[in-house]
Length: 131
Length: 131
DNA sequence: CATCGAAAACTACCTTGGTAGTATTACCGC
DNA sequence: GCGGTAATACTACCAAGGTAGTTTTCGATG
Image 1 (spheres, rainbow over the protein chains, first blue to last red):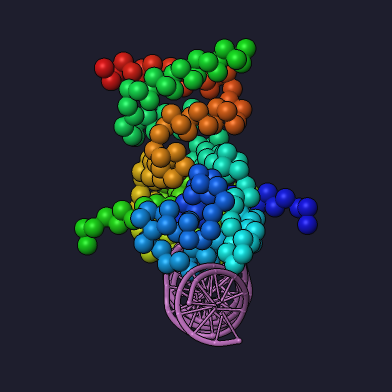
Image 2: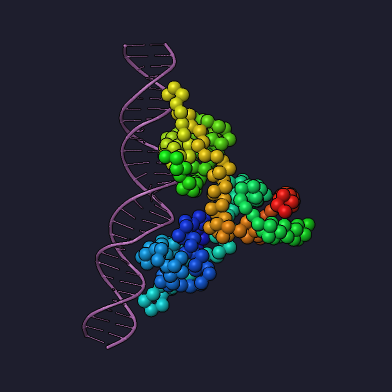
C-alpha cells in the first residue's frame, strides 16, 4: 500500500475542524479533540470518535495507542490540505486565476486597509523574487 | 415564504458546472445543458435531468415549459454563489483573512508576473477608493 | 387516428459526511 | 480479583450529491 491516494482533500466542516485541532495541538486523544472543539459540548464524544475512525480510513489521520486510549495525529500536512482545498476552489470558481479571485473578493467583501497593505507588500516582494 | 433560504450555497461539482452553463448560455433545455458539458457525452441525459430537478428543489434553478420541454434558468446570481462559496472557503481555511489566503497561494502556486501586476493594480486602486 | 420518439416522471442505488446510541472491553483502584 | 468507568467497537440513520435505468406520457407526423 504505498499508493498515496492523492484523491484530493475536500474535507467537510467537522473533518476540517478536527484536523485544525490536530495541527494546532499535535497528537491528541478523542477527549482532547472533543474538548477543544468550541466549548466541547457541541458534539457527542462518539461523534468525534467515529469521525476520527472514518478519517483514518481516508488516510487523513493515524493513531497509536497509549494504554487504553488512541492518540491521534494528523497524517497530512496543513499546508498541503489548505493548498489543495484553496486550489480546488480557485479552479472551480475562477478557472485558476488568483487575480480573478482577488478581484471578486475585493468587490464583494470588506477588506481592511491593513489587509490591503499586507497584500501589496507581499506582491511587491514576490515580484522582486521573480524576475 | 419570503425567506430567501440563505442556507449557503455550497455546490457540488456537477451542480456548479450546470449553473455555469446556465449563467453563460442563459435559459436552456436539458438537452442543451448536457450538450454543453464537456463534449456532452460525459453524463447521461437523465443524470442532468435528475440534477436539475434536485437543484430546483433547492431553489438554484427554476423552469418553465415550452411545449413538452422544460426550459431551465438560473434562479441565483453567479456573483452571489461565487461570493458565498469563496467566502465560505476563506472562513474555513483562513479565518476570513484575504491576506492570509493570498500569502498562502503565492507561496504554494505558480502565479504569473502578469497576474501579480494585475493584483497589485487592483490593490492600489482599492486603497485610493478607501481612504 | 395510430404510432413512435423524445421528454419528463419515477425509482433505485452508491458514497460520503455527519450524528450518535448501544454494546463490549480493558484498565485502574481498592 | 472485582467492579466501575471510560474507551473503543459496532450498528444505525439521515441527507445530499451523483449516476442512471425504466416507465409513462404527450405531442408531432404520416
